[in-house]
Length: 337
Ligand code: PEP
Ligand code: MN
Image (cartoon, rainbow, N blue to C red; front, side, top):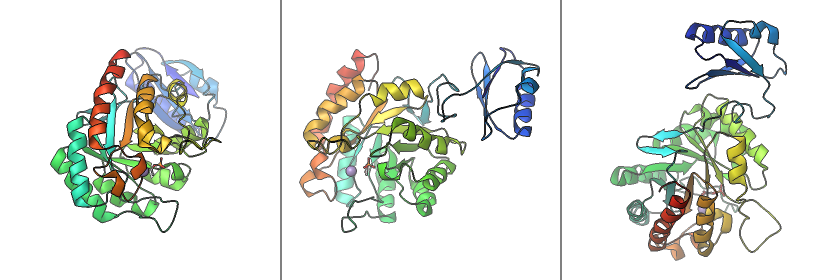
């Protein structure tokens, strides 16, 4: 249920409603708008004792939230969630570019790539230190050694860091180094991990599961928000379909659909969506044109020797050219890079 307070309702009136909601066994989730405050009453129970609330001073109306993802939905919060990381704004007019190799492999390659993506216009550096690989015999990541390299790259370049966490036991460690925690496609429904990541208080980049519907994805986001952390960046990274020409099939429709259903920002990963560097250019442009709030692109200094996802990684020169071309696409839809 959403309790809509009258314009000009006092702080005291808002507090009283919150206390009432809590006494009825719900969680109160206030959102302070410029004109009105709305309070989400979130809980397992379906029905709130409405007369007890409607008659309270300052209350204008009560409306049910029809969606199962109560905190992530637009019905509760009409304004977009904007995530601020110092001077970087995710979900605002600017389109944020995240780039870097799939995995942190070696100091030499990683720092060189970091400097190049920064020069090209990326604001956030990616690089996995814990890799969720399909085969147990593939490179699994450098773990804390890799996290330390991410830290050095941040100091050297000023880029913010996003890196994946694959296990609840590592959340504290990864959060010590990362500016944004990534939950990968394979873990989208690892509910304990979602909760732990949410509790860390860090922004969370939540990738869409390989075979997840948009509703399942938003329910995963709901797990994070329900910990009190609404700094969530949704990431469309392609889904499994019958098509085999690309690694996955990018769901461009997810961008406008998610924007209609949720207030959370959405970015696109064209690298994992296609599996082939040649297609990254076209799909990056399509994603920006469709309204994505950002892109996460794999870039490697030497893709043919990459330990992970070389075939879908752009060389820095190609990435630089792509960012330049994306500026025109962004400006055509009145946004900027
Ligand atoms: C990644 O971004 O490194 C990754 C493993 O992606 P996904 O979870 O989308 O497969
Ligand atoms: Mn990868």
